[in-house]
Image (tube, rainbow, N blue to C red; front, top):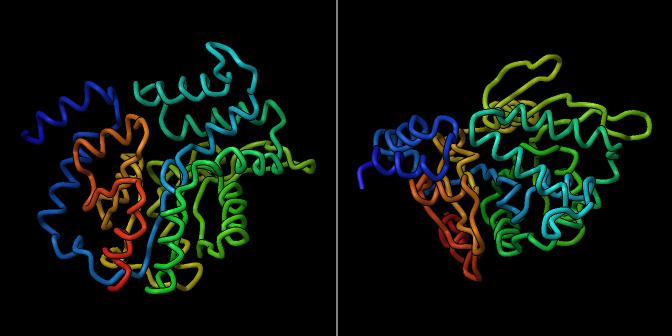
Length: 293
């Protein structure tokens, strides 16, 4: 199927996924023009998306489920309905990603969400952890000595709790974490946002917004590490990381269960250099791909 017709068909399903046609075209053109960059050779940096990739769920969704836990339609937590409404507003172009993060955190702050509540959110996310992926990352870190970075639009504070758990439970941790940063009061309740990981570099009110790529470059510069797009690999689950995928070798994990719109878009348009099924062979396929290079 021609690219234009495939994008048009996908648009009907994805509705208003921002920049889908343009991003798809840029992705495909870069693969043709810069083929050497996207060959799987030496890997020095591995960037792993958190929500939907390292674990199946979404930390923001689970935080809303925890905070708005009363059951409504057919036994569904109110938090899930709120999350779905926010996602629909993004898909229809009513909300930007930044709007969604700001409004979601306002809802949590209004209910007195505390820093310690992230531990409860982590417990909710644990059943969906992709253990095959974690085991592969642990082995890859030994074999390649690559820098491993956890990347998320969710809060960096939650990412820190997750990283501590991985260290204790699995003997593995990420070398760095990039994510949105929250502001807490003396009682450790959320009062606002210091920074958002979003779609473009800017400032919204007093909140700094950086893309994942900008945050990555800043992290590596601050730590004195070398960052080269030619030796960087992204592991993700869907369209949400298209800005990184356009410039980095990309492995897309295909979920076993029902896929969301962003995941379906990436699968249909093949917005990755390799698509790997989330099954018992995930670890071995990743190790075979980059483990010995």
